[in-house]
Image (cartoon, rainbow, N blue to C red; front, side, top):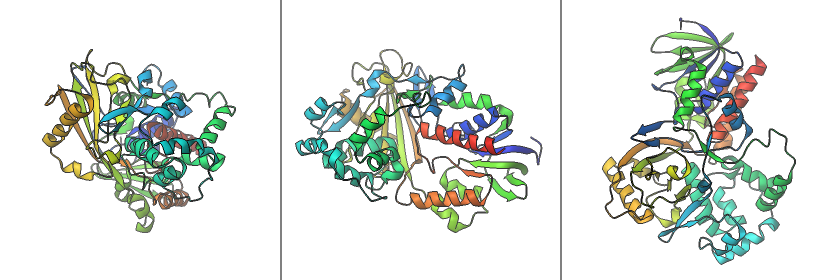
Length: 458
């Protein structure tokens, strides 16, 4: 690209949000330049393929929870497709007192499960009649205790939150971290009553597109990144761009690439960068406005991919096993990709993903690879019944010091600051995991909204 060349939109960050935004803007006929500081596209989406195994470094699954997910893959038809998880993915296991138990999925299993106390099983029958909460900053932990009881918090919600956020339910604010759950209570007065009423509400054809199915893509999520990059086209993507900075100018925006001293003019800038990178990317923003954004806390996560050539029945036919905090184990949980998706391991083998660390245990980041491997081997034997001292055929360790944004009590101030800056600086869009949810579907929905807004302004 020539120096000082104009484009319509500069998109910063080639993770899922940036890729989808750039892809959709390109389809709408806008000239886009996608900038990425690393040497590859995909961000957290990285798939390692080795000897018949597919290991994910980042997200293992998404959920088809909104129509934007379906519509994206319809546009990518022929280059990338959704792979819905097998029915086994509906089974979630919870660790308690030395064994995994299925999380109840019906009234009969809820009554018989050893996960919850008898008192809380009775309490849930009266959930529809409890007064709705009136605290806008109520944590997920507080809400769960109030409506369902302590055992539901300990053996359902706490491990669920570990599986999504690797976070602490006593710190995550329901209104921001689980907005759909919060709105069920606020709009309908009850989780149960709200779920029943919503299920009976009329839906448009577009509203019927979400299946709520767990999904991945053949070959792993890096295949999605590759497909999107191909559609955006290589000449519109610049990798290894350390030192990106943006300044407002009279006719739009000027993006400076420090390595090449290029200055790119655009009408719009979309940043999907992590919160901690924003001060250097947007140096014109005053500290009082930037600090509520850049101080966003991220949970650390270590993901360990394990491949076994002969599983011998030790890999459960389930989505995964989650470990409640009160069980005081060294794992947040284990996913079983080979039970959910095809071609994740050689026939007869197993593919597992172990998760370690999270907000409550950042100290595991300091563990050596040998120490982490030892923890995994111990869990293979203790939790899944592999022989003592069993050594897997493959072990891949992926460390993420700042993996998952935590939507805690400071979220409202952060969102207000983002909204204020976007209003003050026309053509600036601050996106990514700093707002609007952390899941794959959340990122796709946000990117779709931004692309539509820019196209309508153009």
